[in-house]
Length: 328
Image (spheres, rainbow, N blue to C red):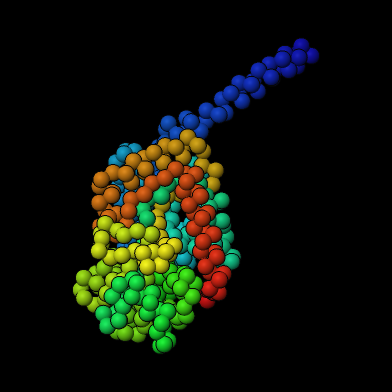
């Protein structure tokens, strides 16, 4: 009995000691992080912008942390497979995702999406922000953004616009343009950017909102004409090309890339990862890379990035619903 009584007296002290020690575990984990390779999942195949940014970040983190960061390409199903891998991973900082705008758009396009794009993850920071380029065939009568809006509203001929596929950035931008100008246009989905470019050069349709890098290459070659960028302001890479908002106030289509982790990432780990990624994004080296690709380096706090993604989800859910877009 004396032994049991003594144990009871010690039990509260043990519980208090254990309770005091518990909050230190995440902090200790952050101090030792990373102690093994970090996996950076890209929801896209090798060779694209997502893969390029992931490899830049991996190289920086490997050097900064003196620990290998490995890029894991999981390109399929609109990025769902890669995102699900990270969503199901342990919240220990060793599995991160490089999401892009499709990540939030999927909530509107895919009714059976197996996760919530924001709530089932831990937003860390944005990396870049950039728009699309509205391009037409050189034979098109419009030469400026104002000309184009006027043409859209007054032409008597049927209008067609193309994109890289149903639910792509170009498709959604085209539908938003129709809604804001109250005009009609038939969407022609192609199987990828390459075929869509060939189609526009060949005069198969009237216009396309394309990714900046591929579109500018065709503009410089004289095969397409640049009308406007889709973001809210002009970009440094092409200061002479107006923003569509100059002719159509309020129009804004912005593509983005960022870094997120599994849900419930401990605050000390989140703080450490955010600080290192944000430091790199703010560097002159990364800023130059972003500008070369027609984008702008952007970093924000985890909470700001979270709100940004929620706003993006709401915007495109509304466009998808009003336009009646269905993924086949």
